[in-house]
Image (cartoon, rainbow, N blue to C red; front, side):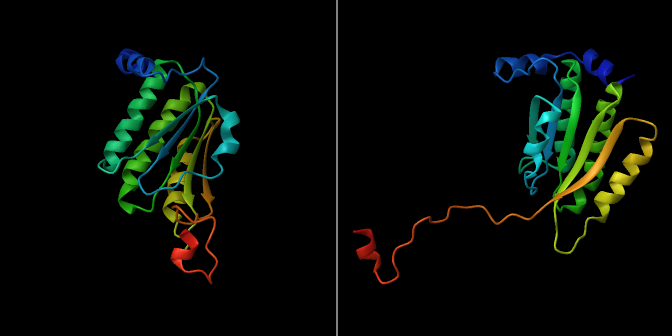
Length: 187
């Protein structure tokens, strides 16, 4: 049974809930999905990929959610897209450094490729921040295993790195002159 057929058979109660909440998707100009694991950064290059699809969906793992639960939630979202007959053209999994998430990450990547398969085209990107130690061999191994299963299809899998970002937070944009005391600077 194909991914799209099983999604249609599962009903679309969640799709109608989505419409009620005001997040209705546009007619099928394609969809892109960004799944962000807890501890991962939003890929800085993603805005350049917007042309791949009009409808953008971002799923972020919550603090109380295990990697397996996050995968289940994102897979449910894939079923919703299939039920709405949306074509998934681009999917990005923004990965964390959590080694324990590898099994769930692999399951999610395989589910995404199954969702893309009926359309015979699509791009899956495994994204990570560039590490100083370069320990990303498990992402390359996953991409390689996924690519072997795609032999003869138009689907693609790639690994892409972003530069590390400075820690976020609020920074002063104007500083008091060093010769002034705190009271003089405030008044």
